[in-house]
Length: 195
Image (cartoon, rainbow, N blue to C red):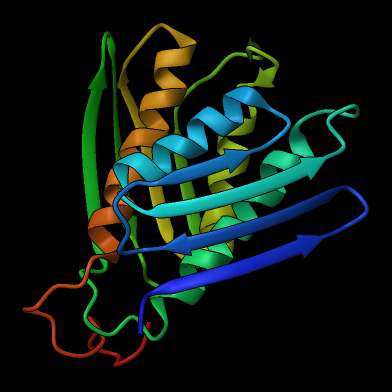
Protein backbone atom coordinates (compact mmCIF):
# COMPACT_ATOMS: atom_id res chain seq x y z
CA UNK A 1 0.00 0.00 0.00
CA UNK A 2 1.40 3.38 -1.01
CA UNK A 3 2.16 6.21 1.34
CA UNK A 4 -0.45 8.54 -0.06
CA UNK A 5 -3.15 10.87 1.18
CA UNK A 6 -5.91 13.07 -0.16
CA UNK A 7 -7.11 15.88 2.08
CA UNK A 8 -9.90 18.35 1.37
CA UNK A 9 -10.62 21.52 3.34
CA UNK A 10 -13.58 23.79 2.63
CA UNK A 11 -14.23 26.96 4.62
CA UNK A 12 -15.90 30.29 3.95
CA UNK A 13 -12.41 31.60 3.07
CA UNK A 14 -10.81 28.80 1.07
CA UNK A 15 -11.40 25.59 -0.86
CA UNK A 16 -8.33 23.35 -0.99
CA UNK A 17 -7.61 19.80 -2.15
CA UNK A 18 -4.20 18.17 -1.82
CA UNK A 19 -3.22 14.77 -3.20
CA UNK A 20 0.20 13.56 -2.05
CA UNK A 21 2.42 10.56 -2.73
CA UNK A 22 5.48 10.57 -0.48
CA UNK A 23 7.23 8.05 -2.74
CA UNK A 24 6.70 10.00 -5.93
CA UNK A 25 9.09 11.35 -8.54
CA UNK A 26 8.45 15.09 -8.27
CA UNK A 27 5.41 15.28 -10.52
CA UNK A 28 3.37 18.38 -9.72
CA UNK A 29 0.01 19.83 -10.67
CA UNK A 30 -0.32 23.02 -8.67
CA UNK A 31 -3.12 25.53 -9.03
CA UNK A 32 -3.57 28.43 -6.63
CA UNK A 33 -4.72 32.01 -7.21
CA UNK A 34 -1.27 33.23 -6.11
CA UNK A 35 1.34 32.52 -8.81
CA UNK A 36 4.38 32.85 -6.56
CA UNK A 37 2.82 30.54 -3.96
CA UNK A 38 2.12 28.02 -6.74
CA UNK A 39 5.76 28.27 -7.78
CA UNK A 40 6.92 27.63 -4.19
CA UNK A 41 4.64 24.63 -3.70
CA UNK A 42 5.91 23.21 -6.98
CA UNK A 43 9.41 23.39 -5.46
CA UNK A 44 8.24 21.16 -2.61
CA UNK A 45 7.09 18.49 -5.06
CA UNK A 46 10.17 18.72 -7.23
CA UNK A 47 12.80 18.72 -4.50
CA UNK A 48 11.08 16.29 -2.09
CA UNK A 49 10.62 14.58 -4.45
CA UNK A 50 6.90 13.97 -3.97
CA UNK A 51 4.00 13.62 -6.38
CA UNK A 52 1.71 16.48 -5.47
CA UNK A 53 -1.58 17.82 -6.78
CA UNK A 54 -2.90 21.03 -5.28
CA UNK A 55 -6.11 22.80 -6.25
CA UNK A 56 -6.66 25.86 -4.09
CA UNK A 57 -9.07 28.77 -4.28
CA UNK A 58 -9.30 31.50 -1.70
CA UNK A 59 -10.38 35.01 -0.87
CA UNK A 60 -7.29 36.65 -2.34
CA UNK A 61 -9.35 39.78 -2.87
CA UNK A 62 -8.91 40.16 0.91
CA UNK A 63 -5.26 39.10 0.78
CA UNK A 64 -3.18 35.95 0.37
CA UNK A 65 -3.03 35.02 4.05
CA UNK A 66 -5.98 32.61 4.24
CA UNK A 67 -5.02 30.74 1.08
CA UNK A 68 -1.36 30.45 2.09
CA UNK A 69 -2.09 29.30 5.63
CA UNK A 70 -4.89 26.90 4.75
CA UNK A 71 -2.86 25.32 1.96
CA UNK A 72 -0.06 24.65 4.45
CA UNK A 73 -2.56 23.19 6.93
CA UNK A 74 -3.90 20.80 4.29
CA UNK A 75 -0.42 19.86 3.04
CA UNK A 76 0.73 19.17 6.60
CA UNK A 77 -2.30 16.97 7.23
CA UNK A 78 -1.62 15.08 4.00
CA UNK A 79 1.99 14.43 5.06
CA UNK A 80 0.85 13.28 8.51
CA UNK A 81 -1.74 10.92 7.03
CA UNK A 82 0.63 9.53 4.39
CA UNK A 83 3.25 8.77 7.06
CA UNK A 84 0.81 6.54 8.93
CA UNK A 85 2.39 5.23 12.14
CA UNK A 86 5.83 6.42 10.89
CA UNK A 87 7.34 2.94 11.16
CA UNK A 88 10.60 2.68 9.24
CA UNK A 89 11.02 6.38 8.43
CA UNK A 90 14.32 8.20 8.82
CA UNK A 91 12.50 10.78 11.01
CA UNK A 92 15.15 13.51 10.70
CA UNK A 93 16.15 15.54 7.68
CA UNK A 94 18.41 18.52 7.13
CA UNK A 95 19.45 20.47 4.04
CA UNK A 96 21.60 23.53 3.47
CA UNK A 97 21.11 24.82 -0.05
CA UNK A 98 22.33 27.81 -2.08
CA UNK A 99 20.54 29.89 -4.66
CA UNK A 100 22.92 32.47 -6.03
CA UNK A 101 23.82 34.73 -3.06
CA UNK A 102 21.22 33.15 -0.73
CA UNK A 103 21.97 30.21 1.57
CA UNK A 104 19.35 28.60 3.84
CA UNK A 105 19.37 25.64 6.21
CA UNK A 106 16.19 23.71 6.99
CA UNK A 107 16.03 20.91 9.55
CA UNK A 108 13.00 18.79 10.40
CA UNK A 109 12.05 16.16 12.96
CA UNK A 110 8.83 14.27 12.31
CA UNK A 111 8.49 14.00 16.07
CA UNK A 112 4.79 14.55 16.66
CA UNK A 113 5.70 17.76 18.52
CA UNK A 114 4.77 20.83 16.43
CA UNK A 115 7.12 23.79 16.56
CA UNK A 116 8.58 26.23 14.05
CA UNK A 117 11.80 28.12 14.66
CA UNK A 118 12.07 30.72 11.88
CA UNK A 119 15.31 32.69 11.66
CA UNK A 120 14.79 34.31 8.27
CA UNK A 121 14.40 38.06 8.57
CA UNK A 122 12.13 39.29 5.79
CA UNK A 123 10.89 42.83 5.19
CA UNK A 124 7.26 43.67 4.54
CA UNK A 125 7.45 43.37 0.77
CA UNK A 126 5.98 41.42 -2.12
CA UNK A 127 7.35 38.98 -4.65
CA UNK A 128 4.87 39.28 -7.48
CA UNK A 129 1.50 39.54 -5.73
CA UNK A 130 2.56 37.43 -2.71
CA UNK A 131 3.52 38.99 0.62
CA UNK A 132 6.86 37.51 1.69
CA UNK A 133 5.80 37.82 5.34
CA UNK A 134 3.52 34.85 4.54
CA UNK A 135 6.51 32.51 4.30
CA UNK A 136 6.72 31.94 8.07
CA UNK A 137 2.90 31.71 8.17
CA UNK A 138 3.10 28.84 5.67
CA UNK A 139 5.82 26.96 7.55
CA UNK A 140 4.23 27.47 10.98
CA UNK A 141 0.90 26.15 9.73
CA UNK A 142 2.64 23.18 8.11
CA UNK A 143 4.60 22.34 11.29
CA UNK A 144 1.45 22.54 13.41
CA UNK A 145 -0.62 20.38 11.04
CA UNK A 146 2.08 17.83 10.21
CA UNK A 147 3.05 17.75 13.90
CA UNK A 148 6.74 18.23 13.23
CA UNK A 149 9.60 20.29 14.56
CA UNK A 150 10.93 22.58 11.82
CA UNK A 151 13.85 25.00 11.88
CA UNK A 152 14.59 27.35 8.97
CA UNK A 153 17.63 29.62 9.15
CA UNK A 154 19.00 32.15 6.68
CA UNK A 155 22.80 32.03 6.48
CA UNK A 156 23.28 34.57 3.68
CA UNK A 157 21.05 36.40 1.24
CA UNK A 158 19.83 39.68 -0.16
CA UNK A 159 17.38 38.96 -2.98
CA UNK A 160 13.91 38.27 -1.55
CA UNK A 161 12.90 35.90 -4.34
CA UNK A 162 16.08 33.87 -3.82
CA UNK A 163 15.71 33.79 -0.02
CA UNK A 164 12.10 32.61 -0.05
CA UNK A 165 12.59 30.12 -2.88
CA UNK A 166 15.65 28.49 -1.35
CA UNK A 167 13.79 28.29 1.98
CA UNK A 168 11.09 26.22 0.26
CA UNK A 169 13.66 24.08 -1.57
CA UNK A 170 15.69 23.39 1.59
CA UNK A 171 12.47 22.54 3.44
CA UNK A 172 11.47 20.15 0.65
CA UNK A 173 14.83 18.40 0.69
CA UNK A 174 14.79 18.07 4.50
CA UNK A 175 11.21 16.75 4.47
CA UNK A 176 12.15 14.28 1.74
CA UNK A 177 15.00 12.92 3.85
CA UNK A 178 12.94 12.70 7.03
CA UNK A 179 9.96 10.98 5.40
CA UNK A 180 11.97 8.39 3.46
CA UNK A 181 11.81 4.77 4.49
CA UNK A 182 15.16 3.69 5.94
CA UNK A 183 15.88 -0.06 5.78
CA UNK A 184 18.07 0.28 8.89
CA UNK A 185 15.11 1.51 10.96
CA UNK A 186 13.02 -1.20 12.59
CA UNK A 187 9.61 -0.02 13.73
CA UNK A 188 9.04 3.55 14.89
CA UNK A 189 12.28 5.55 15.22
CA UNK A 190 11.82 6.54 18.86
CA UNK A 191 12.68 5.01 22.24
CA UNK A 192 9.08 5.86 23.21
CA UNK A 193 7.77 3.45 20.58
CA UNK A 194 5.54 6.14 19.08
CA UNK A 195 5.89 9.49 17.33
